[in-house]
Image 1: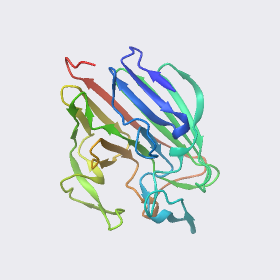
Image 2: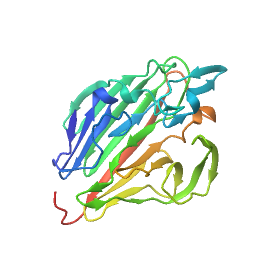
Image 3: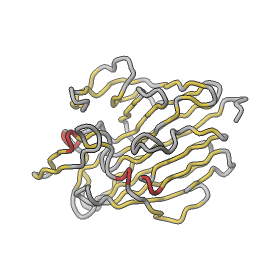
Amino acid sequence: MRISSPDGSASATFCLTRGGRLASLLIEGREFLVTADDAAFGWGAYPMVPYAGRVRRGSFSFEDADYTLPITMGAHAIHGTAWDQVWTHVDPPTPSTLSIGTELGEPWPFGGQAVQRATIADGQLDLALDITAADRSMPVLAGWHPWFRRRIAGAEAQLHVQPTAMFELDDEAIPTGELIAPPAGPWDNCFHLAEPPSIEWPGVTTLDLSSSHDEWVIYNEPDHALCVEPQTDAPDSFNRSPLVLSPGETLTISFSIAWAVAEGAQA
């Protein structure tokens, strides 16, 4: 499903059968996302819900009960359950807006619903994710996992970011909950930032990223991509101090991508 800016200069395409993910972001004829391949996690920009990042060994306790999630990467559960579900239209789409949703059923034991809303206009794509608990309380940790292309039109991506603190990782690459001074990259870590991040392809385009929440996971180890991921908390919060939704309560998280095309850039 594709939506376009009113002036036709940008479009966003969503794949409902692959987790409701943003499958393509075209700006002035250039693709800014790693596009579809066989890797479940490695392309587009997909909602991570009802958990983001790793849950240690797929296990956690909540309200005096123990729960087990599918192991999806290494020894851990990762990136939620909705990334491979089929999403459907919640409201009829318009040329520049979209609203899609999915039920959070098995293997997620608490039920609930996720709805993603998208609007593209005036040099910006705005995404919002509403997560609603069913008839029982549930923990939640949500975000998006965008895969931005490292190279566009011959330009190498430059990540502009000012980390103020980083979540310490243990020997299983799981945050301990302690904050430490950020080391030099490359990173696969969760940060607090002094200001929202941006990605610049010199002479081509700059993307300014913003979110309603403060945690950002930055994964800049791959040669072909940059992942700058807004989240409601650092991974594995279920095993630390999770955000809890009461029955019927909704959490909303937002993510915006604004762009400025370099003067004289050729499509």
